[in-house]
Image 1 (cartoon, helix red, strand yellow):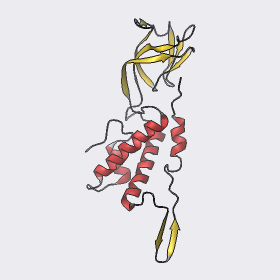
Image 2: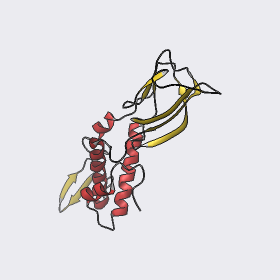
Image 3: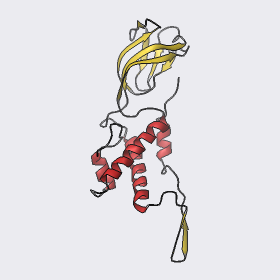
Image 4: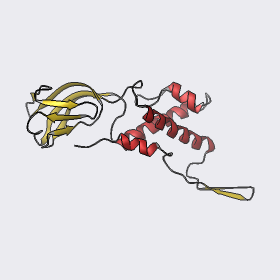
Length: 189
């Protein structure tokens, strides 16, 4: 088994932080993949770089149009209209804020309509360009999940040993992770 294509950390990061035994390595990889997918769902975006080919989107009757993913690393084409879209020219018909992931009409608005905007682009971060705070959040959360796995304490709220009882607060996200994810939440059009 190996890390999935949407994993937010590398196998080397995983080894350095979690130091799993050879026996636990597949579990650690599954945990990192699961945490990475959870981060995608929580931020409402695909964090790792992906190509979006001939993506039909709905016009919103606004001068700004937020793409489903950011940062945009390559904008191949934008066309407007249906059933025969007209190709628009960057810096003439519209502008792009690649870091934030929105298109701005040079004049007027993006015509409201169902699947009337056709976009092909690449967005998200490669492993090398992944923001350090996101990588750290993924490693912290993965380490927490691995610790729960090793102690087999999922869902445990208290433990008694030798006449003593300890209550455990099981927060799903470790401190700081929720705040980091909020910084990367997708803004909807």
